[in-house]
Image (tube, rainbow, N blue to C red; front, side, top):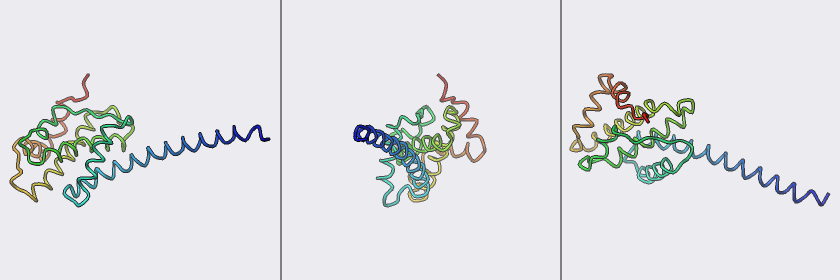
Length: 163
């Protein structure tokens, strides 16, 4: 019996590590999804900067899903955009959250891009309410496309998932 104790210990330890890793991944997935939603609703909140930083780094580092930063992000990357960092981060975080929430659509890049752009536009509108001087024509054009129902077609035409 003593002969089996080290083997049994190793098997239990290995199982616990595997369970913890799987549970940890799921917990991080849920944390990222919650972070994306929180940042849409309160991008200037007390903890928003720390949450945004964690979520962006996690989205960039995870091997669980990948997102493509494409030309659609151009208006968010412009150095003249007052809220560019917040918008670019939200675009990336929201795409990651979309893919985590919809594992059946991991390869539907247009759907992820649309989710990212729409989320960034939500944040943009919130930020404009607090600082109207942050208006940006290129992002206002995306808002106009969204409001007219043309944003999905615009995203599809960009075809960010093409090889």
